[in-house]
Image (cartoon, rainbow, N blue to C red):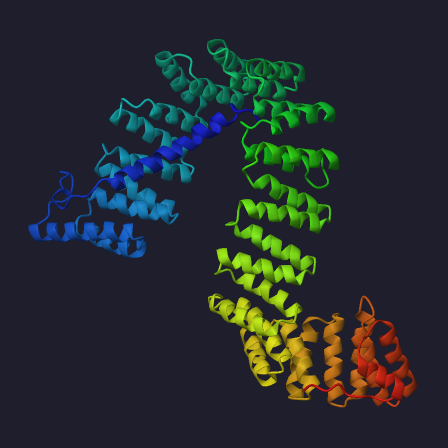
Length: 590
């Protein structure tokens, strides 16, 4: 897209912007208590009522400034009880409704304010904004006509009026207004482009071409007008003429990055990827072309399933962006995306560390680094990088969660509990986050053999988040291992299984609870179900299956299962003793 194409978007946005800006100007004017109701059209008040009104009005302004909007509305409503024709109060209330997104209420208030005080341009400017929000473009255009009479020295209002008439479908009126403006001002871009858009809307292509050609004749060295002409040609599928216009821009300004991208799109549409790539590279190497535009093109080119460049070209473009925007971390962030898409997390992490060297105060970069560490099962880096991240973002609960995972996996339980004390403080009473942090706290306490404390914390986890199935499963298993509160363990485990019927680990826990309750038949049923669900053999599940078979007096098969568990890599010394002595030996928890 050429620079010129964005002109109309700018023009229409400007219509709204002026209204907003004008409202702010009105708000900025200090209200003098002695002059609030000086308009002769407003209600004549007694001295007492006038003093009360002035006090309330100023208090309403104060509450609105403090963003106590509901209080401000109540106060202004009382002002209107005292003086129903106070246009200033109607305007202030309308402003509040606009800020709350209630454009219907604000419209009624502003229409009344304008009817009372028709010469106040700021009331009308805010009404324009409200009409636009309510898609009442013809009414908005009429307001600009009124405003231009109040402020005749500002020609912009006539431009905005014409644009709104076009939006309202009143194209003939809009053209007539543009022609009047053109007679006064000559050939200028806003008028010509506005007329061109109307002619396109009317299907009058020759007139649309004529407007742009008129601009080019008046300003032959302004390259963006050739871009507008090129887009008209492309719309008519006249590729040859479009290319001529693009090449004319390059004659005027060979370093116009936008045009190189436009020509690249032109060649891509024509399936000429070689020429397209040449212009893409020139655009990407242009330091004057903004990175956002280049990144948008890069995303379009590399979109999954419709990529228009090879992997080698993709990588080359990223290197060009990095070299061209050396002080901006975002090209390297795109490189991180590239490596992750190619399933190269190590390379992605190296690049992300360079990103963070440039931009340490971006939370999302830190979070991404920690998640890559998690994917790589690099628990030391997880904990170390979390420490660094917390120096910049001490209030981010996810960092505490990820650091806890790193410490838990490294079996640094004492340090884990210290970190969790801080994390819980920063969790801001979010039950899901607190549940996660307390889960890790319970795990740390359990592994430090502070069993009663661990079970108390697990109780808190279940209360906070009844769907934290991982915590409930672990809690059930630990209770069964300890042989304590087995009815509670069975109830919790049953709930977990009901929600996750195909999870082999959870089924193993349920079976083990029945094993500890000496209900060996049920234990066998659920253990066999667990083994049938597992995607791969589990050393613990197979050992447990052998234990169950042993108590069902199937000792030969029990020993075979223990041997199988050993072959699968189970490092347990007790397992070897079971096999050697052909008997069940309970693992002791101290």
